[in-house]
Amino acid sequence: MKTMNLPPYAPTLMESTRAIGYSLESALADIIDNSIAARSNKIDIDFFPVGEAYIAIHDDGTGMSEVEICKAMQYGNRNPNEVREVHDLGRYGLGLKTASLSQCRRLTVVTRKAGILSGCCWDLDHIQTAKKWSLQILSNNDMRLLPAFDKFKNQSSGTLVIWQNLDKLRLGEIDFSLSMGKKMDAVRQHISLVFHRYLSGEPGLGKKTIGINNMPVEPSDPFLSLKSTRIMDDETITVNGKKIIIRPYILPHLSNLSAPEIKMLGGKDGMRKLQGFYVYRNKRLLVWGTWFRIMRKGDLSKLARVQVDIPNSLDDLWSLDIKKSTATPPESVRKNLAAVINKITDGSKRTWTYRGKKEIAAGEQHLWDRLTTRDGGILYTINREHPLVEHVLQSGRKLKVALNSLLTQIERGIPLNQLYVDLNNDEKIDNDNEFSEKELVASLEQILLICSSDNEKNEMLERISHIEPFSAFPEVLITYKNKRMSYGNRK
Image (cartoon, rainbow, N blue to C red):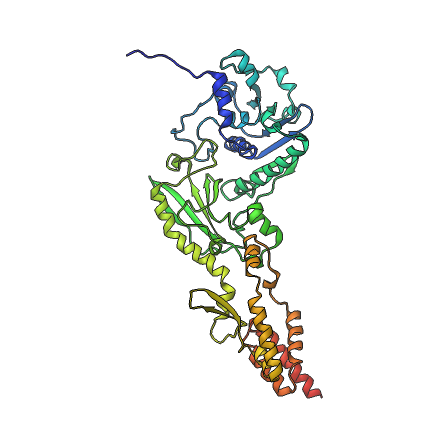
C-alpha cells in the first residue's frame, strides 16, 4: 500500500475556518484564555474604530520565545487529548488563529520573553497570493510600526495580539464607529460574566484585571453570592477519578433585589431564561442558562442556578467545542445532576410561593382565598371573613350589598394576564413591597377611624394582630397599644 503526504491547501482551509461561528465576544474571550494561561495579571483590550481600524489585546504574561510563537501560530499545534496543565484554558490548539481570523484578515502577534522580542503575522491576502502556509516573521522595525505597540514596548514580558482589516466586523455596517462601540459594550458584558471569578479574585485564582479602552471590566456574579441562599452543601461527582463540584444557589425574590441587581442577573434575556446550570472549566464560564434537557424551564424554578465546576481533564467527556461555548454532560454526570435538581427547584418554588405560604400559617387570617373549582381551575376570592372586610359588611344592609358587589368586581377584574407578563419580564412589582413602620402606623390610624368606641378599637387591634402585614410587626402593635393606653390615662 502506498501513502502520500496530503497537507490541506492553506488559502482554502484558512478561509473556511473563519466560518466556525465565533461572535466578537467569544473570539476575544478565547484570546483572554491564552493570556490567563500565560499567568497574566493585567489584560487590556484596545479598539480603534476609525481610519485603519484595529483591535489589540495585550497582557503582562510570561510571553513566548521565537520558537514558541511560531508553534502557537501553527494550526493544530496541540493534540486535544494531551494532558494539559491544571490551569490551562486551551483545548484544540486552534483558538488564537480561528478566533482572531473569524473577525479580521490580518492577525499579528508580538511577544517578549527573557527580554527578547519576537513577532509574526498571518495575512490572509498574502496567503491567497502565496498559495501556501506562508507565515510572515516580523523584524524589530516592523513591530515598532504596529498600532498599540507603544503601550507594549516597555513591558519586560507579555504578548500583544493585533487584529487588522476587520472585514467581518465591517460587513453591512453604515456607521462602523457607532456599531463598533455597541459591539464592544456587548464584549464588556460577556467578559464580566465569563471571567467573573477571575475578576473578583476568587481564592486560589488570584485577581485578574481586564480593561477595555482603559476602562476596567467589573465582575458580574450570576449567583449574587452575597445575597443568595445555598440550600444544600456542595455535591461532588467523581468521573474517571476526577472531581466535578456542584454548588446550587437560590436567588432572592425579586422584591428583595434592586434594579441594577435584577439587570445583572437577567440582562436582556430575563431571569427565567437564565435559570439552570452554569458550567465552569477551570473557573472560566463555558455554558449557562440550561438544564441540559433534564427538566423544562419554568417560572417556579426561575430563581434556581447551579454552579458546576469541571476540570480540563474531562474535556472529551463533556464534548467541548472549539469555541469553548458549548459543552454536554456525559450520561454518568446527567444522572447525578438529575438527582439534585428536585431539591434545587423546590427551593426556588418555596421562594416564589413564600407569601402564599405565610397566608395559610396557623392562626393567620389572610385577605385572599385560593380555591380550586370543579373543572380543575383556580379561583382567587377576597376573604369575606377578614376582620376589616367583615367589620364594614356589618355596618348596614345597603352597604353590605354594595360592598359585596364591589369585591366581586375586584375579584373578576384582577389583570392576571398582564401580571403574568410582568412577572415573566422580571418587572419589580411594587405591590409586593414590605410596609415601613411609618406606613403601618398610618394604616392603623385609618382602620381605627371606622370604629365607634374604645372597646371596638381595642377589639379591632386584637383581631388585626393576626393578619398581614400587622402580624409581622408585633412590636409596632404593642407600642401603639401602649401609647393609646397612656393617652387614655392622661385624659
